[in-house]
Image (tube, rainbow, N blue to C red; front, side):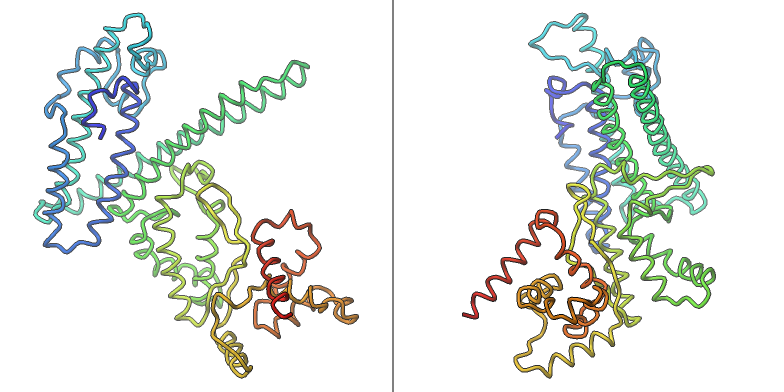
Length: 443
């Protein structure tokens, strides 16, 4: 644990530790809030006390206050808020961002080490106390802040986080424009391409992604306290806003029903690239490409999908997706196609199938739409003169009448027959192998 690592400055600079502490605080708070939702009221205080005790057992100086480092701040000509916000003058990087390896020579080693150690002791105490205060505030015995005061405090937190997100994204977007201009200028002047320019930008961009992701995670937590709605808000906030947003949708769309609203919501949830928009001080930013990892954000998204799917069933519809799945990011997958079917139609298809000898309910052994198309291809279905000359739309509609699957999705699978196998991925090859096995087992 960072609080208990006496050798931390041998591996990281003091500001590197501050960045890690800030990220850890966000993760711990998020975990605690999720745990509290699942606990009985009688167990909440015991749980929180155990967490506080775990922190206090760590080997750090508990009361290392701001006055202990006032001389350091004066020498550096910097405020503690600038250090906490990581917005200190760049010239200080040679002191507080410097990794001090004991195996290498460093000018002014003792002075820099004393400065970093003093700052480290303060920040360890500061963030430990912040976390303890947070845990104390969640106790059932904690004296609540008045509603009016609570709203003011949380609004300030939300505005501050939005300021941080906008600042980082705007700076990164401006840096991208400058990079393009520099590369174009090199081309105009006939000078050699400089890969260092792009490498520097990519390094800065990855740092911006980390900063924005941390801020969005903090905003997700703040959304619970302030009932603040945005794409990645906590599920409880989404649920709180559902009825009001439904009414607004119906007012704005003549003849629309709740099922129309739910379908739109599901499509939006599956389209973060378009929907990750923030509005603040009459400005908007798209922040999807600045999300470093979806892992922690997916919990809320999956709850929203489950909630909407159940509501859609109550309206007589079910959600379907194509077999294709696209990997946009190492932890971010997107269904190839989302579509909706009336439950009555599905039930009718199931009833028709039940009259077929040897019918079984749908299991993993039942063929997917892609496998059905491949099987029909192998058995000469598409070689029939009338079927071969028919447009793919008519072909897919005919197959849909046979198997009860979505015609639009089947048309996509038929179009895949004209593509090279290398373009369709490993799952397509697995489907081909499965059809080969089925046909071979007939012999």
